Length: 253
Image (tube, rainbow, N blue to C red; front, side):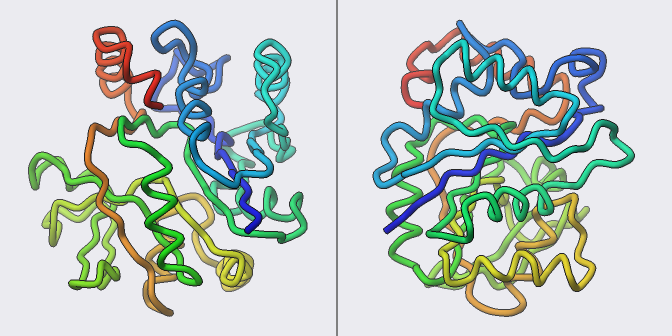
């Protein structure tokens, strides 16, 4: 089956200013390279990927093109045309834009470029493909209920189907956190546009997952291993420290 990997890198990461004022988050230093190197590395062992796209904003597009040329990466850079926080498209509109560049062909593996994880991405894809034609998302168990309040949290039934999804609840119903790692089979990809046409929030992928789960099966796959959401300076510093102390993480993606 055709499989396209879409890397989301269209945000402006204002919470990381001044680090990201002139540099996109995905190109911040990590280990001996940058964050994006680790994200792209995670794709290498995923079977069946026939094309890779990275969607970004116009402000940072040239920096990603320079990274692509420097590393000779087979990653197509898609410029969403925006240049400020105020006119940004949002992650879901960027996803739909990238989808139009592949003419709606095949399944989509979607990864936010501010996700760093130590579990094998191919394990997630293998499990997700067993749930086709329904979509799947990766989950991580937060270390505490307090930590889970910072993220979208799900509950699941015994088949791993998501039964509820709440964003940043002060009283989360579980510690299972939704990551920006999604598998969208071709049969349901048209629902991305449908969500946007209905006025769905384009800026937070969790709202799209919440919308999907109300309409049909969405499966949550709990992954074992560390995960870093590079949303704050503290989270970035923690990831840098972890990668510098364990170089095997870069090899595992």
